[in-house]
Image (cartoon, rainbow, N blue to C red; front, side, top):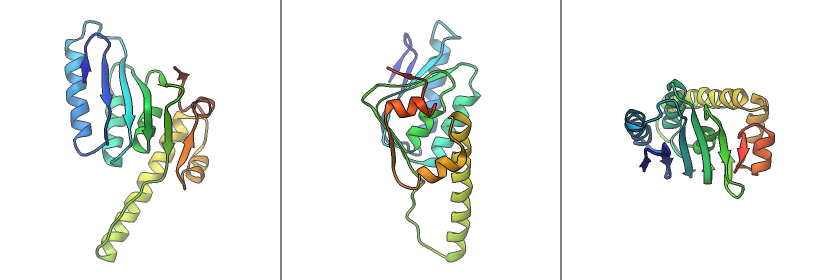
Length: 170
């Protein structure tokens, strides 16, 4: 969905192999046609999460933009969507009854041991990147995130504000 007047873009489904390109297309269109070129864009999130590579691409894209991107959770932001919420470059917000959940990457793989080993090395690097991102965006360090994301970590709006994952409860 696209609203030029309010500059809202939605992530309202699973983050999959189409999510990054869809977001770039919608963002470019919105930025091209809206009247106030400097106003922040509102990224409305209601997502169960999804692909970690798409998530990292979305974060890199948001950070590359000249305009601020407000992230707003209405409903849920789980897993990859929770990390995108924390990475807004403008104001990071959530409604008071929304649910946010962080956890480790999950995977189901089989194959040759050498391929599994290479895959695990990659996953460990990605995990470290995620903990670094969250430590940078919040007031909790990498060790805190690593320790607390071993199981599904559901946080209230108040906790998210206290940990500086979000800036405002709306």
